[in-house]
Length: 120
Image (cartoon, rainbow, N blue to C red; front, side, top):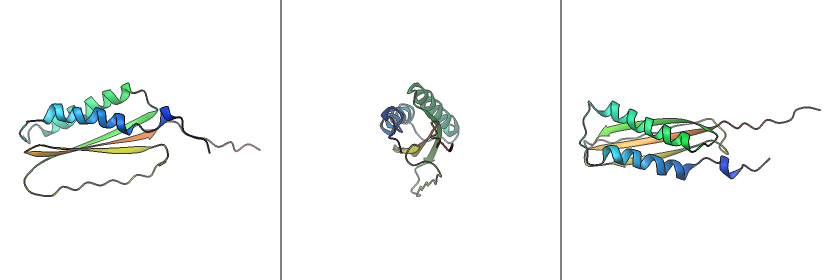
């Protein structure tokens, strides 16, 4: 089993550095407005995808964004993935202000696949 090149490791810290400001710049000090939630989610996702692509890491990314009004109710999210835990990864970035909760999850799927030499 070969060691993974550090430049190919799932860039969790870089992702956090990209996602946190993408959310905060858009939602800090903003009042929840149900008619704007779809646009907010799309803007956050688009901003994050563009920045993630600029990292030039060997990953395909999947991003989810959930925005929910704060009204005293609970909010729970979960995910299950069948993947290579040594190469693929995910990170979750929560945010809240006085009127809403936001959770952005980024999944990174490695495009570098090890193939075993099956020749005799």
